[in-house]
Image 1 (cartoon, helix red, strand yellow):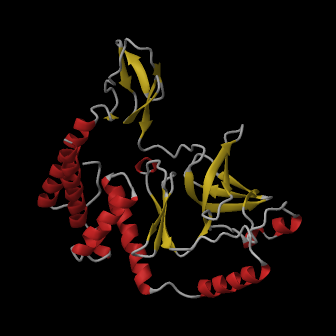
Image 2: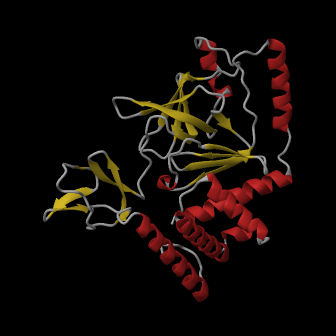
Image 3: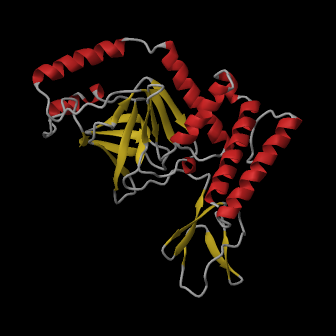
Length: 321
């Protein structure tokens, strides 16, 4: 059962196995070649020309998989995307990373890639919000913006000739993340979508689903448009922000952060794709059953979530018919 490392009782093991079997049968009806293991045959139309991509090979006139993963098709290209692989960046991806080094005119971030990503000083908004050339003073004050171990949200800008990755943070929605938890899951569980920033209004929580498998759950921060700001307003805002930073996070807010973070952990352990709707359904399930935040990581809640997801997908399948 997906190699789950959970202390399951015999009854829980049977219930979980039934839920996974139901999920597998539902997914096979939707797409028979969605997932493959080593030596599985990948159905293709041999009359039309196709290109063999990564994770595939020709064996006895058939296209077979050489790795475990999901079959992807782009025009004529057929390849297998490995599940337990490191993050493979694409231009435009929203990522969350941690600063590991402050270098000359740049920060190096760990983003679950084969190399550290680079965020140039010239590729981000300055604290004053004014579009201008970066000066030597800005370079000296780099640690006032980001320092080691800071969590940062950014966007993939491009690749360099040496394979290194460059980031940018030119929008107000990017930048330093504070007062929250950073979770690390397998990157394949985060699907690319139009919206990776979510504001959970009922909890006052910001949820950022990084394509690199880094998930941020933290207190909501209002996005400020500082492109046109006069000196009085900017100084007033800075004083308010300093006062806010000095205050502690309320207990209720910390509990909300932990409950949402534990919902992400449960879904990741079960191998379900992570999205805001599924996270909220998991949180609501724990609240409706009055399950304590710590008990969400127990075996029983994992089984309940798997059964709930199997039931939800079954209902969705019936509605489509």
